[in-house]
Image (cartoon, rainbow, N blue to C red):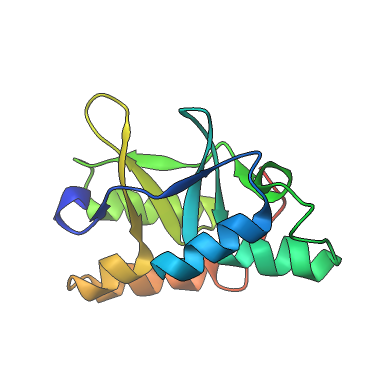
Length: 142
């Protein structure tokens, strides 16, 4: 099975200079756990609900005065939409991440895949392997 068969098409995003509060409200409104981060139209990072909890709240930062760019994960990892699910799972395991941006044949971000997508599409064994390798991990900012 290929990534394009299970990924969520399209990616919501914010600008790196936006406040963390803006990003958190956007995630709540869209009922999603991550946003791509752009500097104008260039992808520069990803911010997750966990980043907000651990890097902002956990460090007593004010989300009104903290920019997304200050706490995002830089240089987000991605895979191609034509990659096998096992390759995407391997990337998640190696980088200890649960979400992976997806690029199309032109190199543009066209979607996102997460461990839930893998599990819900009948690849439970792959999903379990990813979760065993990324659980409770929250490494340094990239």
